[in-house]
Image 1 (tube, rainbow, N blue to C red):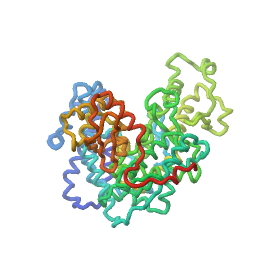
Image 2: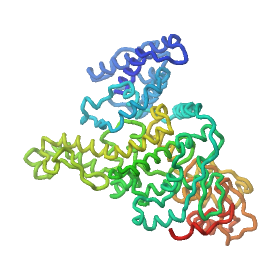
Image 3: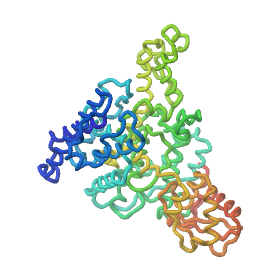
Image 4: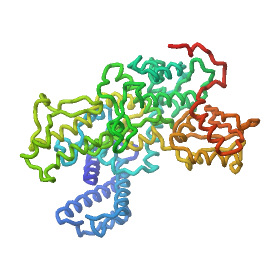
Length: 567
């Protein structure tokens, strides 16, 4: 299917003949060879289907010479029992094919806002459950259908980076940073009693949204791609003596992400897998389908803008969201397996009903085992009718396929309104052309970064007034190695204001300090000052206490008490 999709994409562009920088005639011979190769592979695959094996024709010499990966893969021992090595080779072939086709794609036309909007809310493709109308029909669909086979290689990342840089050429110079006042004390008190403000107005996220009202966020969140300035705004922490040279800015991003993944804001709720502690993504959250007011959609759009800013500016947001969330953002295909990523119990139940005949259940026995109506339970626990009058209409043995199809469509599209708002904000910061190339895993990695493992942390560590082989440094790495990933993430936040890599940590010796002193950090310069502790146990105790209890920023200027008053 993927080769057929690619072949039809190539045929369409050969007919369209887009006006590219280089004359098309100079590329014509190469393109015709590619087109011949695609048609040959497709014809051979169809022939193999009919014969139950790969066709006996040899690979054309021209194709074998130009595309060695295809020649290497062309004749496996048995096409029906490919081993892991052969499947990896096939993925490399598909990756090479997609890169060759890129030269003939006008992405600005292919992923225009009009076409992009039309894709929103499309019913997912569900394999044998899908109707013909749900299959890919346009060249854009053909190209997007190949995303799931794409390898996460450096050249794809380089292409995305190039598209993002190209997007800011016409921005022009920006003015001074806008000042945003944040009351962290008020936000912390709200977390203790979120019912007092059900819309989450005291949270850092909502304070930031209010503080940036009237600003051109599309330009603001793209400024670091054009100017040597790390911050998108200048943060003022009310009641705290701190100068924003980067640390407070990143602290705001961290706190906003933490609030989104909690009950401090009503925008996200724990996924069913999270609630039931089962399946994958047990720490994930999903959008709240009932939050569709004007203010809520405005907040979702702002989240999309934040995601876009982070994706293109090497920052990070610690968002715990399932794969289906990122797939919907980049327009990647969905299928029945995506329900498992956030609700494995419902997925297993629907699969069991669909294949109940395999257990010897017939029409007469079905009614005794299932008492289903045409309704489904959404992630927030509310019921949704799958058909008008669904609460009163029973599901029979012969109706189960229709019911399962409707249930899958409802569950995989239950947050369409919220996702459309997020994607609208994202597209204001990340151009459609880049979203068209990004896979869901690439976007997630750009936004959320990776886990904080010890070896990666060592790569990003610089030794200033401490030697790498000194006793203090050796004790430090022993303690860090014994930490959990959550503790290492908290350590990174303590030092840099970020919770995930990449973030450089610079180690300094805290002179004149003893076992009674705590380590200190300067988030703006990514500096960690370590006292020369006498034992590993003391260092562990002091370091853990500091990373969880010493997050105030009061070393730059005098703090003011006004913000600490009860609000």
